[in-house]
Length: 418
Image 1 (cartoon, helix red, strand yellow):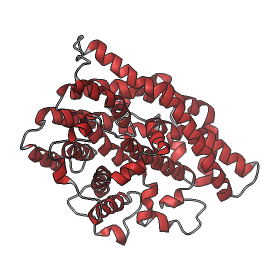
Image 2 (cartoon, rainbow, N blue to C red; image 1 turned 45 degrees about the vertical axis):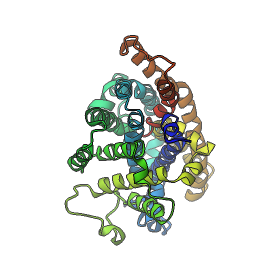
Image 3 (cartoon, rainbow, N blue to C red; image 1 turned 45 degrees about the horizontal axis):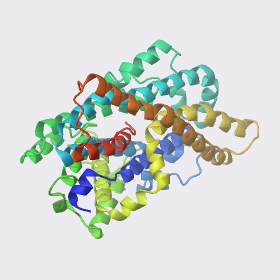
Image 4 (cartoon, rainbow, N blue to C red; image 1 turned 120 degrees about the vertical axis):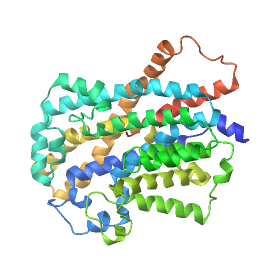
């Protein structure tokens, strides 16, 4: 396949898979936060077995590091939202993405908040009992807001995206970051395009955004520029020791733990100039992880398997809905196993975790099929109806056909955890 063919018909199922894995890490992180906080190193936790520090105080914690997973989402968004522009140079891709962004994200956000309203009304008593069992108030604080439907609607249409009001579904804190970060990379791509000196702009933007959540968006955009342009071969890192080092470094930096005090294994990473070292190292770790994936056909093939691609398809829904499942099904099941069947704490945990994950996957698939997919179509309809003024490109254009073929997958890949 020629370079032009690769540009015009990109296969990015492995990017969906990476987003799905990151979303699953967030799910595991929040389950541990709610039901087994000791494994995250949270002080005052009940039910400690003694081996927890081997996980939370070592690089193994990357498997449960939900914060790093969020930065993987942000780097992926910077890449996926701009890679077709750098492959084709078509400015209309940026305009379409910017206009459609809000309408594409809104429907699943709205549904998740309406479901939260039901949880607050029907399950608050069970969640309070759960707080007494674990010694951690994560779920309690999550659903302790008064059931104000008007305020929930305001947060869905405005607060989640523009003023940080996310009290009714706290995972939505990333929506505002995602929306602004998306507009940032769309604007930067439109402004600097493929100008010869654009690398200076990347450097300045990176330094300016060093201690913010927007650095990973710029890093993802940089990768999109590097690996979808005419000189991408100059940046290949091979498939040998260098690739393994980049992958290992990305995972190691991703294990930088923001919950506990830094142990000696991480102390040397803390630099005085960094206000939030975990934010910086998670950004760089996600950047290196995506770089390794973009350079490894073997990793891409592994990540393109159907189960992982499916996980990627439902990743946005899974991110929005998993805490709702934990506040309802998982909490009730756990309390029944403990207080009615009288199982031990960890036996109940071992049963509740897989059962809850099955429910999370099922609910996420339903939201994806009936809400998330329709959100993508809604955004397309609004853009084509009100913003193109009938100026649809002729379908006979090979470039337009190729862009349209990759459009749906790009939308899905850029919609994960925000």
